[in-house]
Image (cartoon, rainbow, N blue to C red):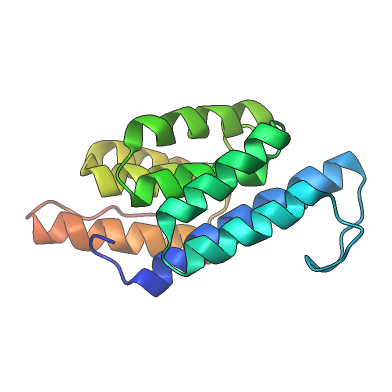
Length: 169
């Protein structure tokens, strides 16, 4: 990853995906247990597999796994967000944009989604869009450590280019 350690990026993307699951399942009235629980729908198992691929740095395999999931379960916000993040990692930003649009249709512009999207813009080098999107994520959840981490990464990039850092109050 550009400008950040692989471990930070992996933790960021996996946390984001897990966060959307919790919201979507809560709203649907479902109870969750372990991802290894055989009572979970197969799409949740596919997401767990894709997350492992992503965590291992196998981004192409993660894309394939997430794509299979959204094919089976097009309303799975976890899979769409994971697919977007995986596309980001292989610089397929055109496809990432489609996945970000779909996840926003499903769950809205949540702080988690905006955080991922802001990081995506950072990867693309679009620092103005990254700044605006991460600021919106911050306004939605000012204590979220993943959002704060991405703002720090953006600020490091801005300062290295001689630009003023993003200041959050």
